[in-house]
Length: 370
Image 1 (tube, one colour):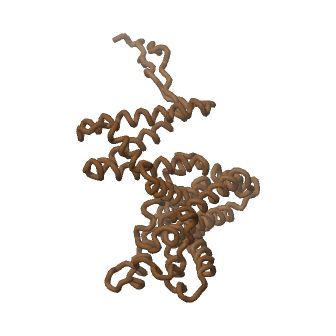
Image 2: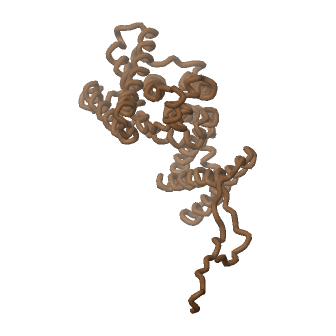
Image 3: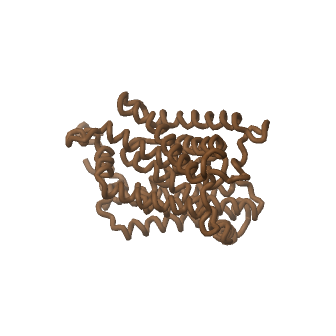
């Protein structure tokens, strides 16, 4: 090799670049394409693992969610509760405060509702009792969210770990009071609260048990959309989320914004707890939140913190849950198989965001450069 020879490099075949100004139509087409691809992969997996006709499997999923009026109402109830918790975590996430504690905040709101039903069920008129429950649930959820917010604002603690650990505290509190208020004695659970008098039960509208829950969440969705997009507080949340230093530079009180936003987040979680206890099951257990606090993170993120779009993302996840359960029942398959299909679909939906935000560019030439 001659002494004046030079090392040569070869250009890569492709590189990843940030997309600039992708139109909403193209972004929608990418997302639709990801769903189609997910369904194709699920069909292949279904045939390979079970030998079942994938068309029948998909039809069963649709039937499990929309097959009867009862299933439709159950789907809407599941959608509304998931959406409610998603609305709660959204302002915190938009502020870049990673509130992983929605599960515990929902449980504390539900526990406050249950406590009012048990302690005051026979002592207060039903209207006053329900009003007391609303206030207690909102306050309990807000306080549970305010605690990590105070430590974050004053001591700059890690809010992710703090809120996550508070979930476990809330679970144990519910477990403790389930023993204190167990009914019947020795059951280890509270059971249906006030089954005879129905004191503290939210009223039934138009003979539909879940209609009030759905209407409340719909109102919260509109409120949160207006709050985040058009209010001064919503603007301050966006600025703090972009850069706390910038927020301080323009004169915003960052600590105040953090505390105020987390109070709102916890308060809405408290409302979710109220709706789950008083408007749905009329009892409380450690499973009342049902993992919604974690699923809500995905709903909020997929919708890019837009409360209106969250209706669609929450509907998708609720549909997958309902359909997956029907697959297990009709085909006698292990519940894990339906979870596999759900995971594949979510993987493609989440993964498509990469192609919405970035593009792969192939280099025009692979010539060697010095």
